[in-house]
Amino acid sequence: MPRRITAFFCGLILAALPLASYAGKPAARAPTYETMPAVRDFIRSMHEQHGFDVDRLTAQFARVRPNQAVLKAIQPAAVPEQQRSWQRYRDRFVNSRRIDNGVAFWNENGVELMRAQALYGVPAEIIVAIIGVETEYGQNMGRFSVLEALASLAFSYPPRADFFRAELEQFLLLTRENDQGPLDVKGSYAGAIGIPQFMPSSLRRFAVDFDGDGRIDLRGSVADAIGSVGHFLQRHGWQEDAPVASPAAVSGEPANLVAAGVKPNLAAEDLARNGVTVNGGVEELPSRPSALIDLVTPGLPTEYWLGFDNFYVITRYNRSSFYAMSVFQLAEAIKNTRGIDSNGK
Image 1 (cartoon, rainbow, N blue to C red):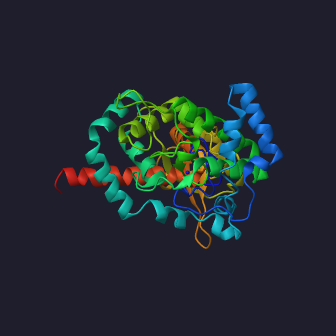
Image 2: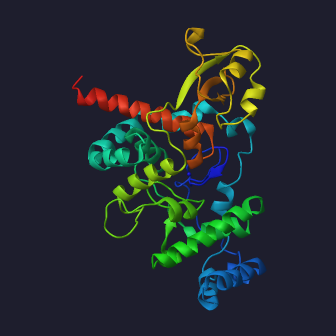
Image 3: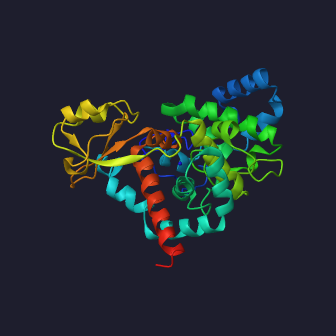
């Protein structure tokens, strides 16, 4: 599940904490959703566009109501300083527990990870790290009713209603295609599903049957999860054997460079003109386009990095520089730790 919630998933995410760990009960006195005019319009649209049975869909919405835990979790942090702290965010995801569990996950699923790396060009450690950040290797996939979570956000959270209404539509199509009951599927507070926390639209577009059993199961099949993450990143433009990010220092005014966003479009001349250097100025600035990433922690100096195309691709999974940097640093830590372990040092 950053500053925004993404695709894809993963897409969406707030200050980027995957919130599969949140859980809650529906508000006791809130009416169920089938009474709401907007829901009745949605049901009619699903019937007209996709042939859903009106009575059956109405009965399903009659079993869900606004979930206050979902609506609370989606809200931005009340205190700005708590909303954006790289150090606090990093400590949650790049720590000894996730590193050690990532090494174990890699050792247990090495064959599938190497197959995904060969097929999609995405390093095994990146796939492992995304799964580690999202659900801690499948340990925490969420306990919310996905139907109720998506309905709550589609019809009771106006700021993102259009996005979540589209995801609700995709979810209902997904469950029909897989012959699942919409009320039976569990996921995160934002409606993300399975070991890699795919949103329904991403699941329909990018998930793959990597274990070859004839169906896609992101909750029960680690192989499908591994393959689907690799496929997602490949489809979003992952460049094999290309760098992700590099530390940088800034002596000038970085505001305009940071404001340019995470998509790499800054040339070396742009960086040099604004006092950006790498490795203390000893190394030349990269010739490839980059983005200047600011990792802010209140009360501490801002940490700067150059993000390249593959860094941007990771943000397609979750549109947050904090998220992408955590994935990158966790991946490096897992790879290095596993290398030490495998060499017996």
